[in-house]
Length: 502
Image 1 (cartoon, rainbow, N blue to C red):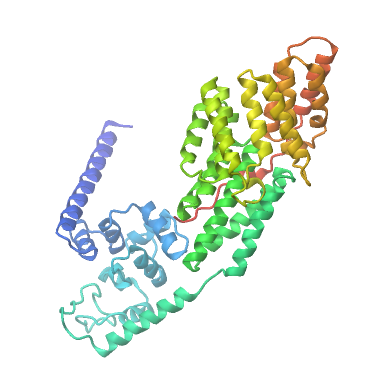
Image 2: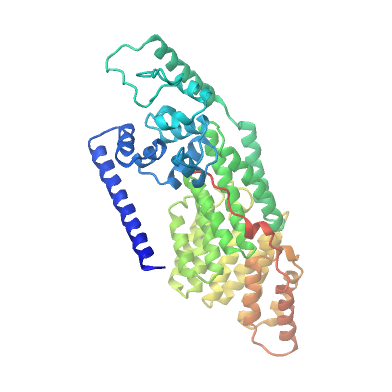
């Protein structure tokens, strides 16, 4: 870049910064004087030559991105920064917004903003006659130019004096506006039966997660999530909106769980953040606990134990019920064991035991409940890592028995429990017992070979240090098992949750 070009860029940057500072000074001064937003916008137009749309945005101290997000939230309509920029610069370039666009912008700005506030004389001259006529119906102009079929300046109307009696037309218009609001508010895109079906769909997905391959559940959850997001962007009663956010959060949490199980940690964390947003919108503590646990598992299986522990700590404030407390304290125990903190392991297992006495308070379906069998193999892992191998074998056996006694055993949970039992026997040096319990794991359908199962298998492969034919066969079997993990659907890596507009 030439020296003159560099100086030009620096000069323009300095000018932009100076203008921003001047805007901020003007806005702050008028706010201190308690001037209305409409007056601040008018000053922005007068002092900086802003078009009316841009002036209102600067009066509110909103970036274009902020306005786009608010617009989507308030109106449910789509908008991006490129189109907004064209509206703001028109008619000096850009593209003209429709009257409907202007009405939506006015509703987004709030503070009494109307369509009339968002146009000036220059805009009016560019509008089609029919649009000018529509605008003329909205206001009583202060003056009329005989040369123009439309009022020369709508935004410059004289305000009515305080205390003046309203005209009959004003009273009628106010009543009409209230009636229009009532009709708008009464319209809804969802009812109680639709929400009942969606809640039932979530329960079915949560139950299916325990028995069906994660990739299969993932596809169904994506469809339900997208349908829920579309409804949220529409219009419904506030209580129905709350329920839609619960459904949306639950589907995102399931998608996060599935992505983590299918070895896509980045996608899992992205889905988890969307789930936490929904949980925070409706203050759903159990959903927050489940989602933070999913995030903690992503960190745990990635070897990031400090992060895993931090995520559990963040969720403990919401863990009031038996299932939630059992889930988090069990997770605490195996994280502490992985870092060699025996004292923390003992404290976490005692807390999990106390939570077990309260277990059953929740009636969450399927994977949203943390079963005693899962807590048992978490405890087995913790005992094994701290050298308490007898306890590790006992808890792993309890876990296997608990899962195998289910009417419809979960393939993944049974495999994980067996694998922890195998690892405990390997730790004692009993390769024969380990081989016996490994056999049912090796028969696991590849579509159920998720990250928790495969991570255990790879670690187990590396811990067998014995020599001889039996040890060689053992390791070879694990190599073959690890060669065919669960298939990851393309949606997991490509998927990005649609913006909710909040």
